[in-house]
Length: 428
Image 1 (tube, rainbow, N blue to C red):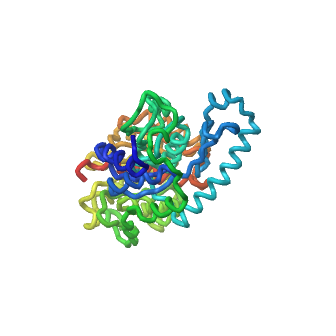
Image 2 (cartoon, helix red, strand yellow; image 1 turned 180 degrees about the vertical axis):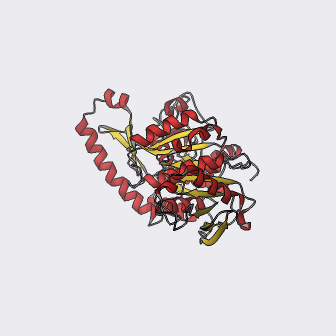
Image 3 (cartoon, rainbow, N blue to C red; image 1 turned 60 degrees about the vertical axis):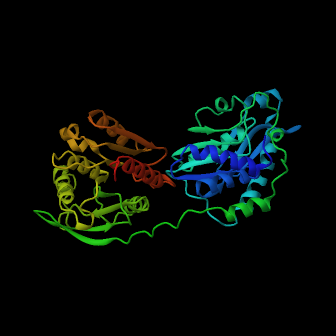
């Protein structure tokens, strides 16, 4: 059917191109999948990366896969094969130990110090030279999904007729030009199925297209927001070709210098969104705890800021990001009849403090709460039941109220980026 892997890659690429993947990254499975993936990446003018996977072969029949493991700790077990071959837990563990050592060696050799391509929000086309049992491809698809892929496409030159059913819902789309009724092994469909060397994998990765260098992160500029009753200081960051602007409403005892909100703002900037962090209270007002919990006061100031944006961002679609009590202020402002924010995101927020005005919000609202913050989680569940707009409640497992746990704030930022960008106007 195919002369060699490059021939298979060129013919597979023609099928993938016809599917028009949006913002694609091509990920090849070393070693044999990389020559195929290189042709697909070339046709799509897309960056090429790898997902190092090791098949776990039955001890006395290594070509028969009983599972697979991947770089990021992914592990897929084919239970029917394990049971049918009567593989003991000790035998399975020994195969996995040996293959993990080889996986680490190959990943180090192939990457040669280069960081993996950022897959967040992109279409990832996972490519191998064929699918037999599907365990290796399944592990790869799970890994790229965990790394933030918005859409996963599995593309292979040849596979059994029932291959899509074997992979279930792990993949958004499948591309395969050849699905024969009789299928024994991938190699029978290649005239030349000789082993791909480590050196060839490295050479193909170094010669592949790369993403253009990202735009430099914008330096925040100090601004002043002149409201009817007060002038508030703020920090405005506008990336090149900004698609929207997010105004931050800080929680009790916090300010525009909040390190957590600044980290989220930096991720929004990298995603092409401008950010405005500003103090809702003056230095003289901050000690007054009544003002800290005065939702109407804080919300009116956020609304006032949205009405008096700096000229540099005045025409951009606006969203609100609120943390803790600032979430109530964001929702209060969103309910103002003359404002039309595209989205609201709440981090560990107190939407319940919005009161009856909560039912007036018509802006798509995302509520993010830590799984280890049960009281606030309960308040958010109740508040969401009162919302009459599009809404979602996302729980970050193991995170407390301040999202200080490893990876927790990154999860918040990823959720916020996705929510805001999804709700930007279509023509923006």
